[in-house]
Image (tube, rainbow, N blue to C red; front, top):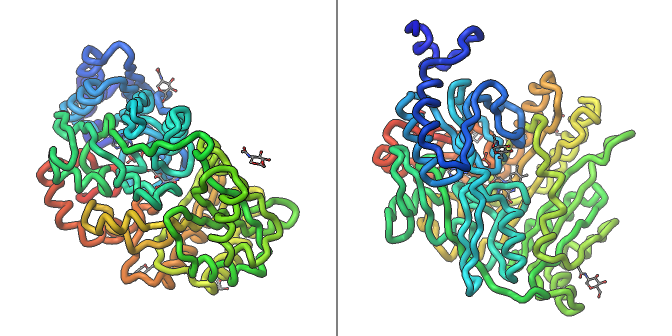
Length: 488
Ligand SMILES: Cc1cc2nc3c(=O)[nH]c(=O)nc-3n(C[C@H](O)[C@H](O)[C@H](O)COP(=O)(O)OP(=O)(O)OC[C@H]3O[C@@H](n4cnc5c(N)ncnc54)[C@H](O)[C@@H]3O)c2cc1C
Ligand SMILES: *[C@@H]1O[C@H](CO)[C@@H](O)[C@H](O)[C@H]1NC(C)=O
Ligand SMILES: *[C@@H]1O[C@H](CO)[C@@H](O)[C@H](O)[C@H]1NC(C)=O
Ligand SMILES: *[C@@H]1O[C@H](CO)[C@@H](O)[C@H](O)[C@H]1NC(C)=O
Ligand SMILES: CC(=O)N[C@H]1CO[C@H](CO)[C@@H](O)[C@@H]1O
């Protein structure tokens, strides 16, 4: 083999003439004999896994390992290390940040088929495979009349969300997804597997719950589950459509709303399409109600009276079973297209800022031909942080547990890459607007909502030095270097 080949592989340069790089084929030769019967290694240019949520800055690798067992994941990590190629663990495929540096010869370890779910007899704990997504966990829990704290969109990978914190409308009584995990099995950078829990590798237990992408691959995890009755396994949820004239009043009411443990509230600017592309202003309240009864509905409406009293044009709120609560956001889950997404955390909602954002969003739609960017949207989410705060700011590496009362994201959604510049300009300006009136001392952004250009302090806060120390201990060569890496 000419030395040129291995050098180009090392540099990650794509050579059209080289059918197989030395490093790539040595990865294959190393891994194939070790894979379990149900696992597959897919190589070549058509080997990309199913489209990721966004194609913007999407990576493309020629090696995908469909892992099936913990040993498959260990072997993939060890062989990648041996061959000198980078690897990336994927479960739901939704992360939108632009921090990747994967090349053609690198490896995706696809965990998606490791989606086994076991609920214990008491229905108080659930063991979940490293590639399971939200809908799979909810469907299993619903059948057993129990509830699990999961993200609000069916397509999201449980572990992908959990490693950053995991916001959920069900979190008011029990905290983030990271507050509900009991232990996890992790493959480290060396290929060694360990159990991580409060009593086993407590340093990783702290670090992985907030900065998890830097330390290991979770092959399974056990979470708390909350038994309930079928008739009570659900929530009051729906859409309130407001006239845009009420933006200031509604924003102010949401800002002043005290979110008790059963409550959550989102609002959106979305596009209703041709001919005017006038944005719609929609609010989606959520109340963890005690079933489909008149009394429970009245309790939910009382909790949101300050918003409901502002007179929505449309109100579709209704009791919804647990396994259908996320259905309203299924359109948000659709993969493919370019989705340039800039997020920010806020301590307050400033009505004038939201007016500016509404106007600029409207202009963005019109200036870019409406239909070309039709699914673009602006989103605000507010959760009850009651239980999360009780656990204390230092209980995990997630730095913004009690400071980010609101999480926001502006998403430019389109297919034509000639719109990249306009998309970044618009969504970036929305983020500037949010940051300027956030009420926070720093630009504190939830890792899973961040764009990718943030500083490490924006993401990890004052935990950066401690996390870097642990990174040196567990991953000195920065093998887990694809998602907001603590080292360049
Ligand atoms: C439609 C949509 C809805 C969302 N809703 C919510 C929400 O309600 N609450 C919330 O908190 N966030 C939400 N998010 C953000 C979400 O948490 C992030 O996009 C998250 O990174 C997605 O994880 P994934 O497994 O789907 O994606 P992936 O791209 O597969 O993974 C994300 C990151 O986690 C790593 N990773 C994935 N699985 C593992 C594993 N088993 N072990 C180690 N590393 C792993 C990957 O390497 C990558 O760095 C949403 C995002 C989208 C697109
Ligand atoms: C690999 O797994 C994905 C699911 O993530 C599946 O769609 C694909 O068909 C699998 N490929 C092979 C060759 O098994
Ligand atoms: C809730 O109760 C109302 C009134 O009894 C009924 O019309 C509706 O179908 C019920 N909803 C669900 C999801 O069961
Ligand atoms: C926050 O980000 C804005 C740009 O969006 C920047 O001007 C400002 O200096 C940043 N604030 C801090 C404290 O770094
Ligand atoms: C790009 C764009 O339209 N920006 C505008 C957003 O709104 C503010 C306030 O109205 C204007 O000053 C910006 O020019």
